[in-house]
Length: 170
View 1 (cartoon, rainbow, N blue to C red):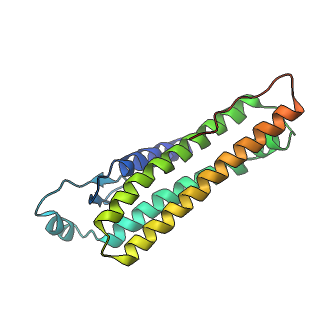
View 2: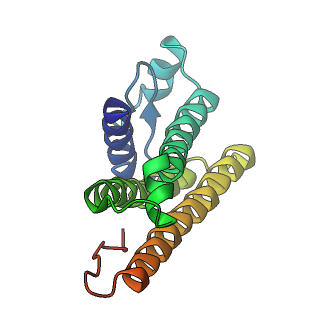
């Protein structure tokens, strides 16, 4: 899972750096921001890349981040902590840190998606897919923040002498 978290973090970071009207190349396992040139369309055609592939790759990156966060929140040690069955505070804090990073990376990725929307403004289908991705990101970030907040509040209530601190803002 560590390598998948790293791969996802890098791709979301690359996505966050897309400029307005930018394009990404999706061949291989990592996103690449394309350089602006007159031959950009020809280059994409010769390499067999299309808008659809770009959208599917970005959708996959966003979906992997969401699935990773849900996996972390559904791990037995995390659920047991939230339900006060165990008191593994260090494991809980590690998982909260991972969740907070995923939420931050997803939010940062929205910038790149919004900039891609500018470039694809004449393609309603592509724009709609990007808008759905943005909504999904907002929903997942909200879920992550609420889950961490509820768990910390419950722990602090059950253990008033040793409050737990986990940063909630991503």
